[in-house]
Length: 355
Image 1 (cartoon, rainbow, N blue to C red):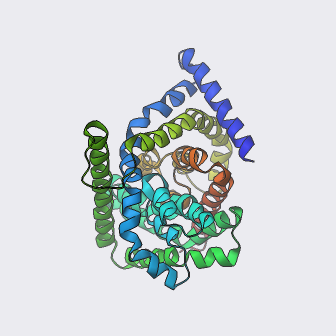
Image 2 (tube, one colour):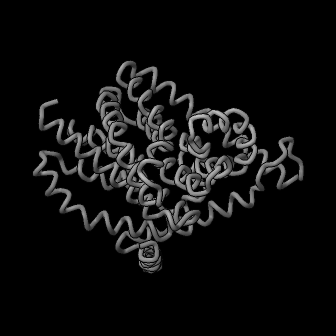
Image 3 (cartoon, rainbow, N blue to C red):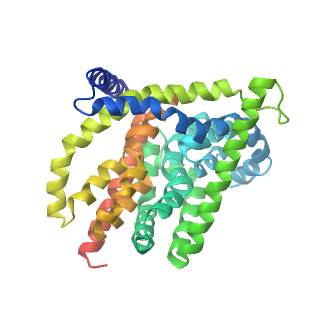
């Protein structure tokens, strides 16, 4: 399966590159070029955390490792509180007692849960209009309810037994339940809290980048044990190379699915913009949320729910996984898609019941 997906990515790069040479006649060339244009934002969002990961693992190891081991959970699962491409993978790998659990926690769990709390919630609440935030929050809650579907599916596809997977995800399930309760009881305070958390992560990432760049240029760094910035940039560059193919391939898939999705939306009494948002959101969160005002109420809730698990699947997260852990690509796709589809189905079911 991974070989087939890599061939699809290569075909996307070839097609996008040729279209770029021909003047972007079909629109795939722009997506090809975007793969490299995203190198800057990608580096800013993750290079500093990659450099800091060994140091953070040492600091967190003194209390996270004993606590997680006491309940029989691999400390690697702590990495799932960060997004896959914002240090979650590196932190999980550094803390891991079992390499397999470390890969799962840093790829699948971080791409679903970590992305939600570090990126989707704070960014989403900042983009959608005030009067639409109730629909976004409701969607987030439904997405969190079905998130275990994605985590369990991804775990089993990664070769982890259902019992072990469920046990390893206990802290994640607990944090998700607390987040769910917080969004239910006091939406505004929870959102403010996650905005502060996201800002704190941004400060840590940029501080790490400043220190790593200073060490590269001057040979001096007050914090010992950090990974060299060149290693971090190698990771970023490999992701950019993959996105040269994944973005044109995602654009092709989006165009081919647009008509069937529109027909499905008609059957579900949802506007075409609501169905298009699902396809766009599986590539990138921000463009999907920029369409939020054009969606109907059911579509707004369904799109927010879908994003909890499926956000950025076909671009950043796929590119990162192919670069770092290509053998887990099937687990990533299966986990994020199953969680997203389950969330969408739950919203449709509840709206049909009039809830």
